[in-house]
Image (cartoon, rainbow over all chains, first blue to last red; front, side, top):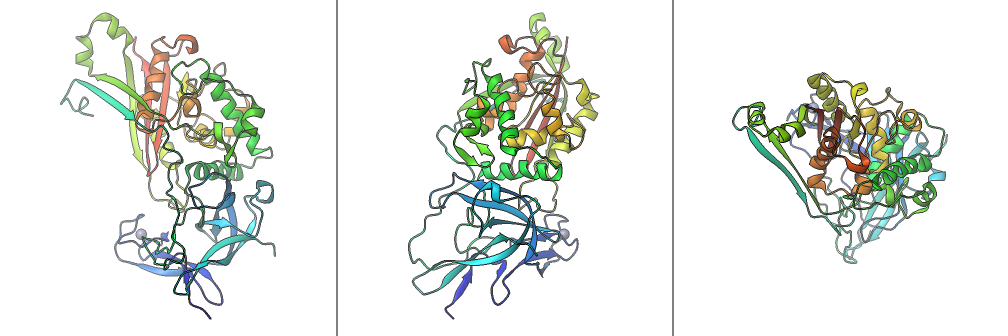
Length: 133
Length: 309
Ligand SMILES: [Zn+2]
């Protein structure tokens, strides 16, 4: 398999791609960025990686039609609640149309290629797609 | 603050901004050369810019989500686009009486809904305008006020509360900015300090950087029952002839949003009405007003102002 790199370091690739949060050892607040200390309690005790579920519920969304140069529009963006941990993501495998989207709908993580660099490495992005059991 | 501490008895607060033509705020371009090796960078270890690929960082998109989240948490059965367009219709109608507004054209509901969509449900007239601007306020202590001529004392406005808050960490606050918690805290402290309740207010200037933001701040500033922002707006209360006029200046959607000047400009607008100097847009008999401003990051200022004489 050709080499792959995740778009962000909190996306874990493999057979079951998923997101990981960094959880404060003292107060259990969760973060996605690399940090020296916790923004909630101030502790610098450290963080543990916590795997997040692949399925969640859309909390809110928008369809962006005006964006910075180089960003294809329109695209649907939202905030997904993964069992109590919120994450920002695009909404994919669905038309970027407000009529197709609804806060409260169930969504599931999916990944896609963003392009291959001159070393043959493919970057993998992620989004959430509508999903009903 | 220096005046309150007794270090000074007369001060000048100034806000200035040069922002015309700045375009979409909050984002950089995402151009990268073809084939350039993917290299993890920054605090998310990202190999490419994230805006537009991992959700949106554009301001119209961020505040669109904040508004739609409110309608999800307080279920709304109507059409969100029309609701927010009606808020914008109000502010653009108000702006026709404000010669200092960047845009002073009345716009119909249909015009606003059919304008260029920026980030659903915010169309262009529902977004604040980048513009240049400046505002200033002269602040004096009680002692210094007594030394001023009678006609200046008559125009003085009492600062009944001046509160600045920053936001505590909340789940999701780094995913979608939380502009509610700190506004609620600032408002609660301001009402407590001033000994004034939302029911005592004659007018409010609040931070309508987008139509979607205005709705949630009705609730955050406790102008309505918790969760009742839509009913409050639908009652007509926030129009200039309503029970509690909001953004009679035209708001940031019409007046413009020169970021560094916006806070003091809101205070100035309220003062004009309390002095009876509001001209064509004067809210008759205004005695108590509130001005609210937000800066992402986040900080919130709330002032309760009262006619002194
Ligand atoms: Zn912590």
